[in-house]
Image: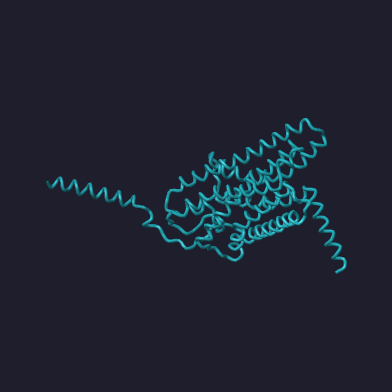
Length: 337
């Protein structure tokens, strides 16, 4: 009897220890009211980085705003292609404004904390802007495909109303894809308040939780892979079909197609290259340091957003001519002052 009691006691003790070790982590979690941004702690020259981000952000906002204003107030530019350029400018403003002010505040003012709700909003807007960048570039490639492959049916296929409806649908679809992120982050218990990255992004918030992040990273990776390869494949197919269509055309049409698509190709390359390195190569075994990953994230957000309006201002004849006219008026007025 004594041996049986000892056996029961030993078994119950072992079970108690096992249950204790596997208790829900909510009991050890903390209530988070704000997060601490620690992504710049290893930065050797924070002021230099801050100046670069600030200048890039200001130029992006100004250049994108100029594009938008030119297209809105010039009725000659109320065409599907320019409406899509205007949409891309709006995407760039949303994308860069999601995180740039926070990073500038950390580097210049030393404001390293961000409240819980604004952090979630920043995460949502940042990834929403990233998905919309893909969608905007893909639909612009589709627009150029119709313009080059079916020039006589272009205005019947793509009207201004259809273009606006399409862009609204894309914004809503991007919102639905990104809604998975706050939906999976909100229920998680948090054990830390310090973010390892430069701002509130999905990976940073998941790493502050008390759970194993593998499932959540795999879930978002599947969505990212689908969006990345779907949009990039659509762009590549559009270019392939345009090349096939132009082969039978005259040299003048070939030059026109090359000039039209070069701007889009530059923008696509600048955006997708950092994404492929960050999302695809890391899943294939390439190990990136924290600084390298953050640099690629920063480059994918700020680089294309600054390049897009500058490229379209300089490469698009109508916008370029409009811009030169404005500069001439400013110079003419400055002579009388």
